[in-house]
Image 1 (cartoon, helix red, strand yellow):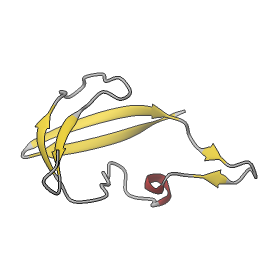
Image 2 (cartoon, helix red, strand yellow):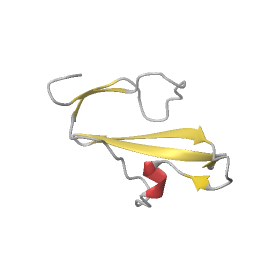
Image 3 (cartoon, one colour):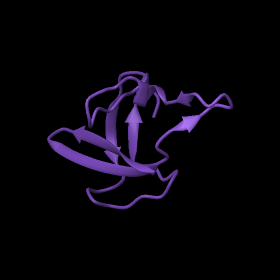
Image 4 (cartoon, rainbow, N blue to C red):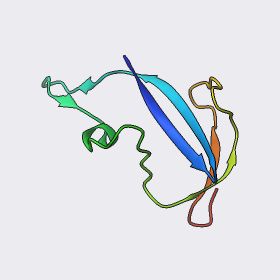
Length: 81
């Protein structure tokens, strides 16, 4: 397992989140299959979103541990939260 990092900037505030994740997944054929985020080979700390949005509320603080599925922020995009 390795740790994925997520950085969120809201105004002048920076928040850093970590998540333990499996190193890689594989198919029945034994070929390595990576998520689009991993396959894109983006610089460390890059946050990728499928569309533009605005963080309207942060629900956690720096250094806070979160559980899987726990909301961390409220994102507004295309008139939806």
